[in-house]
Amino acid sequence: MAENSCELNGNGEKVKIENPAEHMLWQPRNDGALKQEPLWHLRVSVLKDQEGQGDAPSRRFAFKSMHHLTHAVNQLESAFSDTFELRKCGVETPDAQGGRVNDGRTENITIEFDTETAKQGWSKFLKTLGDLEDEWQREAEHEGLSVL
Figure (cartoon, rainbow, N blue to C red):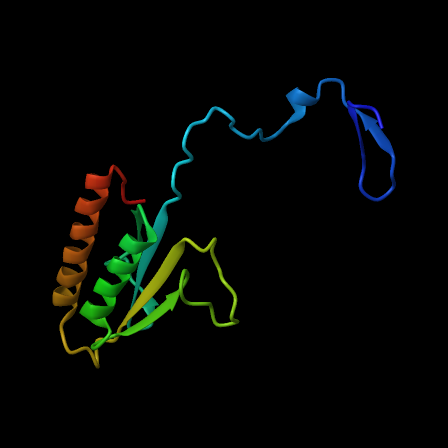
């Protein structure tokens, strides 16, 4: 097979490419630079009285490592798991069908707030959630990251 041709899958027909370097969609970096560590994400959603509310839109936070992400998830569980239903799907938890719905670096948590059974009011809930988000925002800024 010629150097500047390739064999197509299926029918075996050869295609001549004039300048293969110009037709590459991706080229690996061989400049010796260290590869940047991938970011880990936490997406927090609130379901108030079985409806998504504009009062607490979903927020995404970026973390430098899985350790930082796990710490944030543990903080959410500590703050809310005794009083609210938490639904998790992501890094450590599969979805309802047993598969994953993300690339393995995102944790999705939905907090279900039911006005009739909540042990704390909506404003106190939002304050607690806001305090956690502020802490994560400060940590992200310290790491040079941002809220998405």
